[in-house]
Image (cartoon, rainbow, N blue to C red; front, side):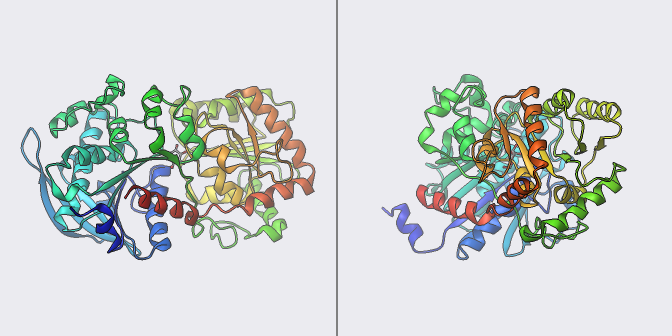
Length: 487
Ligand code: GLC
């Protein structure tokens, strides 16, 4: 019998990377950044690697007039008969990209809709199409790399069907967890429809045996959380979402790899969106970006007043309520703050109310605005990021790279990427606080404002942050060695 090793040692590794979103085709959140960058970084890291990406062919991608050719069609069996999957191919630089189309994908205009059942049908169909795609292309894959609940069922079915489908028998799987609480609630009917039986592992809580994410985690050869700290946190009752006891049984398969940032997009030296480019050696040029923001937002023009910012989804995960609480507690009134983001309407309303409470200090841009996010990273002094949980987090890495000092809660990827001033003053890149408490956060803001007045120390913190290596290269090297470790 051929061993798996001998199959792979003779030719480069073949990897199918699948996700619900990938920048620049479609991006809703951090997953889109990762899926649009990591496969490319892996290809750069090992040019012989044959890695290809697959995402759903959403209506918005159709509307963007992407150039894509139909390469194959096949059908997925279901209780209501065969459902056709049409596979189109396009490219992202050197990377082949498959856009998967079919009725369940076209039926729902949103990327993530509000109808859980429709979403489940779309993503279960997409996952199955991805699983069978390589066979229809006559492309023997070695690794199926899925991301989050949307694609986790492909791994579950891979293992379930291995015995009957020889092409699947050698395939190994890796599941990256970007956000554990989203497990695919409401998928029961979709699973039944596509003839997928519940998981049988008695160590899984019964309610989780029909949820795509735990089903995929149960089957995967490797589970990768997007930071080492989050990989440990999901084993605890605070972050494990009631899966912690089950996940403890998978402990040996779980690891953490920090995401990177794309230096072609995020680079203060050549960023086209900002007024004044700068580097670690010329931080003084950065000041112009702050003045430009103060002008743009009609805030008082004052280089000595710390300018704070919050950039991101307005979601409970991100701890907006802690920002609101902390600001009420602040003794120091000498600061300005610009919010950028959209999300839950109740949080948007609270931010608007805050703006009325602090009319001279707070501005709110309640929208998605990429160009403004660049200007904020480049001009604000501090980034507020009091997340309740943060599997990896992107904003803090971009902020540090732009000399905007993060003030964050010590959780998940924030712990792994920020060096806290109070524990390592010389190496510090930011400020961390422990508890989800508005009071603790306000104390952290007060201490940061004090340090901000001591220009030399502050600049050292900025420079430390700017010289961290958050490149995708590091993550790609780790994923590549994980691929090899499961073969
Ligand atoms: C999710 C997580 C975030 C992470 C991103 C990409 O959005 O909430 O922490 O950075 O996925 O992995």
